[in-house]
Amino acid sequence: MGKKESEMSAMEIDDPNSESSDQILPKFSINVLQLMKSSQAQHGLRHGDYARYRRYCSARLRRLYKSLKFTHGRGKYTRRAILESTVTDVRFLHVVFYMAERAWSHAMEKRQLPDGPNARQRIYLIGRLRKAVKWASLFSSLCSIKTDSRTSLEAEAYASYMKGTLLFEQDQNWETGLACFKNARAVYEELGKYGDLENQVLCRERVEELEPSIRYCLHKIGKSNLQTSELLQIGEMEGPALDLFKAKIEAAMEEARSQQAASLTEFNWLGYRFPVSNPKSRVSILKAQELEKELQGPTAESLPAEKKLTIFDKLFTAYNDARNTIRSDLVSAGNAESVKDDLNGLDKAVGAVLGQRTIERNQLLVKTAKSKLNRKRDDKSEKVTRPEELVRLYDLLLQNVADLSDLISSGRDRKPEEIAFEEECQRKSLAYRAERCFYLAKSYSLAGKRAEAFALYCRARSLAEDALNKFQSVAKKDEGTIQELNSLIKECRANSCIEHATGIMEEERAPENLSRRVSTISLDDSAAKVEKYLLDNLDVYESAVGDGNTKSTAKIERFPPAFQSIPRNPIVLDLADGCIVFPDIENRMKKKSIYSRFFGFTS
Image (cartoon, rainbow, N blue to C red; front, side):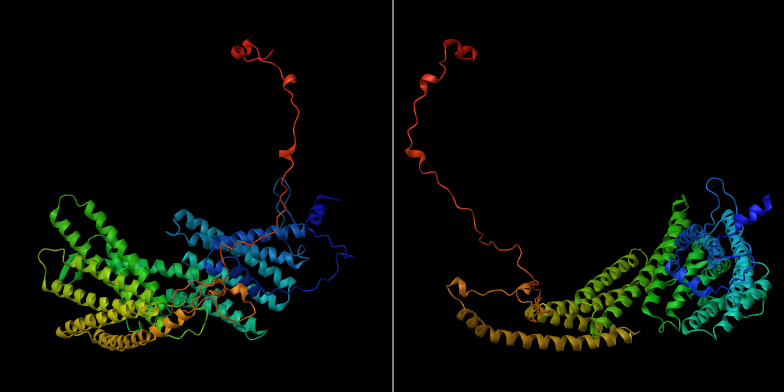
């Protein structure tokens, strides 16, 4: 057998059932989209972990090579190509598919680096995407010959998506990239009309994932009038296919902020104008101001609480980055007093704005906790909100307001705006104290301490009335806070009356309860009260935890367990020992000489 024939035989897969090489093999069928989605969701991409997905693809390829006996040599690597004649099993198509997925996931892993890929890493990233396009094209060509029409269409859409992704990353040939994305979308739209319900849902989701990339390509070509806000809304969509798009949007936004930051020369706060000279500080402040617009814009009310908390976290990061840059400039300012004064003022202004946003975030947490406290719990697995949690949140708010007030009052020559702002902080502090006292009274009430709860409700009502008078005395009235204080006063009065009445009823019942307990007292231990434990009454449906309003320990089982009597072996007393007379053996004992006293031996 010649060398060429031996190479061909080495690339073939042994099939004991095959009679001849001219045997017609059946068409294979692969649900490419479902295979891709399930592999990505189960192995890391649900959380954006591309490194884990790449490791899974490598492990999957090793298993496929071993099961197909298609290894590449034991010592020296010998490349074995997968050709049309090689594909005698559907697993060969899986090999090509996972090779493309591994190269793609490696490229996306480089894209997700914290500081973004540098020049060398970007070259490597594009090289891996080219490799993914190569394997995806091979997968499409093999599927067009070896599989049915549906699998061939899915493979073609997969290859078109990979080509579009490569062009998208290269920032060139936007028309070709747009054509690739549109080709993939058309295939998935057509496939979404047939098959089972699960397949239709997957195809529709894939079409939605491709839509932002198509719109961005149209925007780059100039055939679309997308605004920046619309691009940001598209970037908030989730899915592995959109991670590259999000990276592009973030890079474009950073570039736009850098260009727009050139016009941000001053930071205005309470009548002051502080110059901002460092470009990094400008970009961070501009990013924070954009996030503030999202929280205070017309669509802020429709945002869920989790989304708002995420925006607050990004806002805090931006302001903290700005403060770090300002303090670095302050260290390097040297002896220039005018520059140092400006930087100190800018640091104070940014810190004050950061304190205000911290108070707003904690107010959002309080609002969420109040809604959970007043809402009836339908789901038993839902966490119960206790009044102590609201007390802790109001402690944080009081600390935030105190820190902000100290920061405002730290200057010597203060403007009227600063004085008015400090007075507003004092009014807010009084209102927060009233709210804190109210929920502290609630916690005492749940613990059954009526006198303490009544006193705290009265104190909360007094603080709320003082805060209400101060809020009504200013010219610019805060109607929302005034309404909350009025409702708080009404609740304090109602709850204080309830606690007063409940305390009187318990006091009236106290002698009766005492006489009942005294009547059950007995000197006999057997008549003492026997505590019931859960393990002693398993056949009776009775709670062993106790009343939820009182802090009592659960009675599951006695611990440590009580002592129990157990049988012992009988004790045998040797009574005959005292009655026996033993013989005298003195004459048999060795006698001690005078030398033994000095040298320790006997004769």
